[in-house]
Length: 244
Image (cartoon, rainbow, N blue to C red; front, side, top):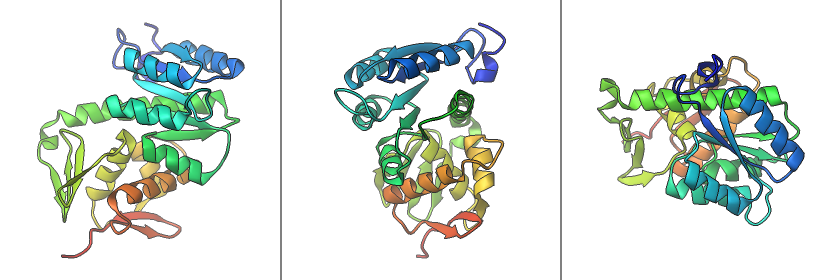
């Protein structure tokens, strides 16, 4: 593969990342596919929801770019069906800048989202960051320090198996939600700024995505409960399990 492959977040020169694009608008689908191919990724396109599910289960892609509004079944249902079978990093596209839609998308298993219209440059940057996070998480899961679960109060985070339990009940998190929780829980009662979370969890170099952090925090609270993560207005967030 070309020299651009490692920069695109692929596992190595001989194994380019596979990205599945599920988008029913031909012009947008073609433009995305061409740009991602130019980055050194292997790209396949599906034009409706059911075809997207079939392609995801067949290809087992490294990541998906998934439109919310699709013929047949929508992107939310596609996400539910795919994530029920295999963990797949998903970047969701939505035509509406609606926080409720974003939270629903994150809640059913999307890792990130962008609203239309968007720049191809930002799309590529988001995908690169997402693939780097997945690769980093895979490496961390096999490291010696990942073997011991992280237990804080009634929350247990198994970094090797990438599983989370609260009070004995398993909580299913997306890869990004898991990384965000590990970051916060690894430094309990310490306020972490949105900018730091963006840099270390999302691997973003600028602070333009602070709303993304806020949306993922809300998704974590919906899954783990509202009492574990404290908001420090104008600054960031802290993991603070309730006292026994």
